[in-house]
Length: 337
Image 1: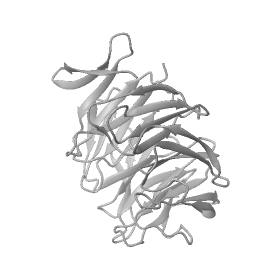
Image 2: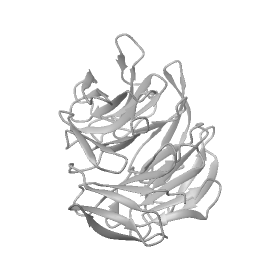
Image 3: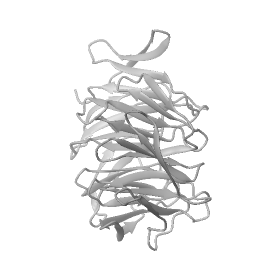
Image 4: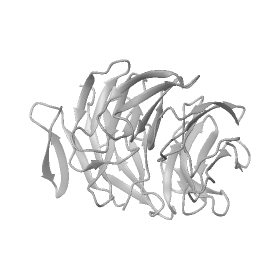
C-alpha cells in the first residue's frame, strides 16, 4: 500500500506520496456542501463536480484539482454526462425538474429541458444521441427512467421508459457507449439490477435480479458492455456479472462496505473503493485478485466518486471528513505504476 503525508502548498492542503513514489495532489475542499457526481472531460482536460439536490452549482477544475470555474443557477445539480464530442455537459437538476445543457468551453447554459413537475431527475448516462435519466422525488416506488433525444429537432424528452420495472426512488443508470443500459435500485435491503438493450432509442428489457446483494451504491460497465461490476454495502468485494445473463464474472476483494467502482477506459483495470478505515482505493487488473496498488486517504471515500482519465495516468476520487459531507477532490497520479 502507498502511504500519504499531508503538506501545505500555497495555503491549500495537498497530499504527496511517501518518498520514492509518484506524487499525488488534492484540491482541498471544493465549494460544495455535498457530493452529487463527477465527470471527466478528457478533451478539455477538466473535471466537473456537483453537490447534489442541496447545491446549485457545477464546479469546474483542471486535472490537477485546481478550481477554475463555478457554474451557478443549476438547481440541485446531481448526475452528469458528456456528449460524444465533449462539447456539451448535460446536468440533472434534481431540485429544478430539468436537465441543463452546458457548453464545455464557455460554460454558458445552451438549453434547459423541463422534465415535469415533481420529477427530480437525479442520475444521467448516455448511449449515442440519447441521454437517459433516472428520476423520482420520493421513496414510494415512483422511480422511473426518462430519455432526452438530443438528435431530434428540437431535442425531445420522454418519460416512463423503464417498462415494467419498479424502483423505490430515482434509479441509478449507467451505459456503455453503444449499450446496454443498466438501471440499479440503490440502498435497499435487496437491491436489483435491470439490463436493457437500446434499440433505435427504445429500451428493451433484458435480464434482471438481485445479484448485487443489498445496499447497492455503484455500478460500472466495461467499454464493450459485456460485463458490469457492482459495489454493495452487504459485500466485502466488488462483484462482476455478465450483462447477457447476470452470470458471475469473478470478485475483487476490497474489505467491508465497498461503495465505489470504475472500470478503466481501456477495459483492463478496475478501481474499487470502500467506506471504511484502511485502504480507501484498490486497483486490480481485470481477471486477477491481487491488487496492482492501493491508496489510503485521510477522511472517508464518498460513494460513486471514482473516475479515470482516458490515458489511465490519473485516477480521481472524492472524500469527505465525517460528520461533514463537504467534498474534497483527490488526484492520484500514475495509479498503475
